[in-house]
Length: 125
Image 1: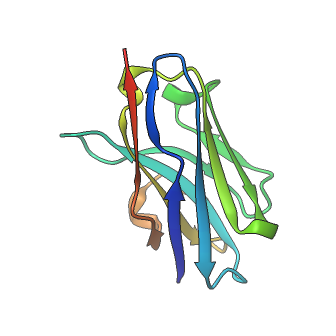
Image 2: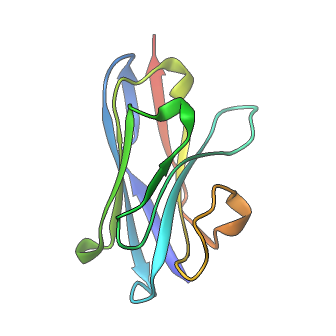
């Protein structure tokens, strides 16, 4: 499996921006597609975005389209999530996750084998 560590969270005002990073280590020679999920207090974990191994295919959930952008740099074993035009409802712990590229990209958390510890994003109104 691959180990994942997120960073870049913090407190930001509504309308602001953050860039989250997810650094991978371990079995990084294997091909993985990557996803970002988030979990707000009292709510279930939800899919945010995913990106294929090559980076050529991305998916975003409807609530973040046009505001969040997922990207990856395989040379650095790092995946990014650029968060723009943040809203208070974006407040959550954000997790990155990895799944084998041999599978189709999934928006379901159960399909991801490796998870980071999460990074807190708080958006004030």
